[in-house]
Image (cartoon, rainbow, N blue to C red; front, side, top):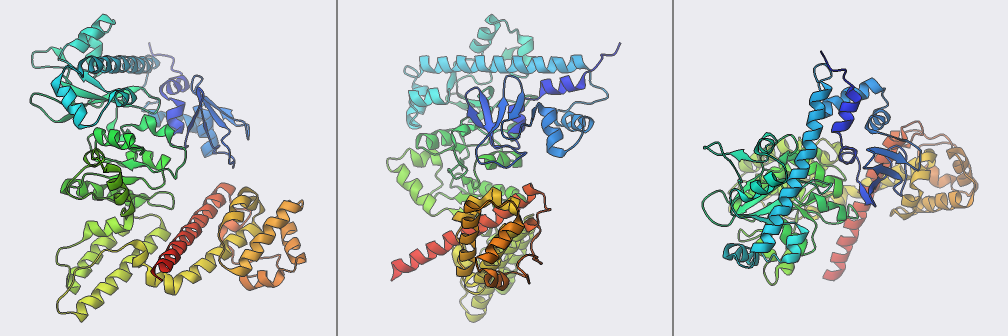
Length: 580
């Protein structure tokens, strides 16, 4: 007899709403709940609350509430059946063949798995605290890595004494060998006996965002074997979707806070001790899913891998993965240490922080790193330079963001032209030199950037005049953004003054107020309009019929470009003054 399957109940039981929503939203811990900026209306203070115990959400701003099905239905503007299909695919539920009893068993397994893993983590931790003073291997390792008792507690580090102690401990807790092997927590040896894979190793618990232990990394202290081993993947532990120390990313208050992606567990610990937010992959190459996780917390994570050849190539691979997804709020920076050193070694020196500060001051941007990754030895002939260009072009074409792709192409073309001229002029050819981004695009900025800036500033003001909903959502941003053109700056100041002092409810009222203040000539000089009421040739996002979320995104992208330009301009001015 077939089960009477309640698929909605099955799917809800398999989804942790906090984990699910964290893929879309940046969550903040608030008591026993989580908060985020509501995805369904524009707001500056988080009012979207997730109740972890009830697996439900509620926005106190717009009133939207419900469970994971409600969220998907609202997000995609679809019905329940379509949401059911999407979520079934998300959690691997076959709507035709899956029985309720089998999935109920899966949910019970996850609860057991988390409970057992937390018990093991506590056991290992107590073991380390009992042994670290009288075990020479442990004390030497901890001293070398500058790990003290505070660090042991923060990262819940542990130690496995032998092959059987933890298994006996779990047996006494009521968990037999079968459940421990069925859940893929432990394996059997060639004699068909269950054993602890981490014997004689320092243990690094791997935790999810909710601070549950879901896996372990183990570093060998004595005997023969791989230096590091990690838990085997299973239904509840997927290495490519996790980062070591991700449970502590909740401490990041702003996307402007630095976030480092390093190679190993001890690198993370050294960085965190020095006051730097850091995460690491789990003994594998960095995946797209892991980059997406990092981007949730920071717009430009800093890749800080080992300084040896393998570390550099690993950094280049990360960029290769990231290229397709680069955007205004999705980029990377890179640190390349000298002398094959790693973050752990550097920071455990007496002057480690000073070394890191110097490395940060000389970090490479994504485009600089892309060029480094494709450099050819003895690149001193036109043929080799053009091969270099071809290789770079192939990489740049992966970038989906058209504006960034075009700017990368322009930067590369400018540099290639310079190199070709040099190779023609000289008989003793010099290799292509790698300079900073602002040096690459200096000629471009001198000849073209003023035109682009004026066009961008007109776009910003044109949108504010013609899309009143966009203006209401972004009036504070408009007030603060730097406008270089004097006339447009005057226009901006008047817009802010009008909406702060008058009861304006639509674009037409704003336009009439601007006309009454004598600004018609300025408007006509900068925009395609005869009467300052009807505007033509404005961007899509400036049209009030455009979806407000899409308009907001486009507007903020342009604002970010304007701010980045202003920062570069100030930096160049400062450098010029220093030279005088």
